[in-house]
Amino acid sequence: MFCGFNLGMACGGFVSAKLIPSMGWHSLLMLGGILPLVLAVVLMVWLPESARFLVVRNRGAEQIRKVLAPIAPKAVAGVTAFTVPEQKTVSSRNVLKVIFSGTYSAGTLLLWLTYFMGLVIVYLLTSWLPTLMRDSGASMEQSAFIGALFQFGGVLSAVGVGWAMDRYNPHKVIGFAYALAGVFAYLVGQSLGNVAVLATLVLLAGMCINGAQSAMPSLAARFYPTQGRATGVSWMLGIGRFGAILGAWAGATLLCLGWNFEQVLTALVIPAALAALAILIKGWVSHSDAT
Image (cartoon, rainbow, N blue to C red; front, side, top):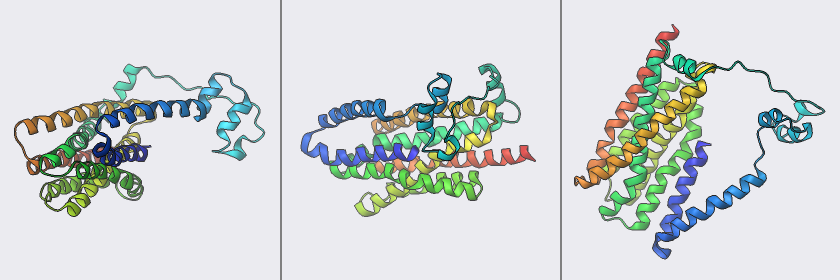
């Protein structure tokens, strides 16, 4: 899912690099309005409803089998009735007590800090990297193309980071990715004069930061118990949105203060270092609690 998110943003950058010079920026708004409408129709017609929803709504067994057959054809063959196991409901107040209990409170705050700082970097670069490049003399096409490479890096790395997390300490894997993101962001700021080097470094920075961000929900889901898992992950994602707001605002503020391309990219070392440090501490805290 996160691969698709980054791929869509990357495609938007590649399309804008070709569309804006020939048809103007208005064409992007038109395309951005039409495509979601087309997608909505496609989803309404072809996206199947979840099997759990169909069972709860007492839909026919044949309709439910059609949904489940691509996943487990042998398991549902010949089944004429489907049921959903009853689950013990937990009040929202009790769930919050779980994620803020003594065992999980420190880890919860560290997950929030990590994801928050990661989105500061992602949204500052997503929102302002093309503008910073234009102000530094790059063409509109170059700016849009290199900005798209930042998102495309996330497509390449999301699966790789997940693979590494399954084989090594996941906190160290993500922490290493955040640290590398800070290094590459700094190097991007030093490489404006060479388009090939700049594009490569932006791609690598995107691989590191977007890969780390994509892995965070999985790490959070591993951390919380079943009764608090959905709430814990949702709160982390919600708190992270404030980091996204701060990143976009910080980019605008720094530009108004007269910061140049190199200064803004160098400043990103700070949130990258904080994210890396927070997730490594979270790993240490989790290990200490387990032992």
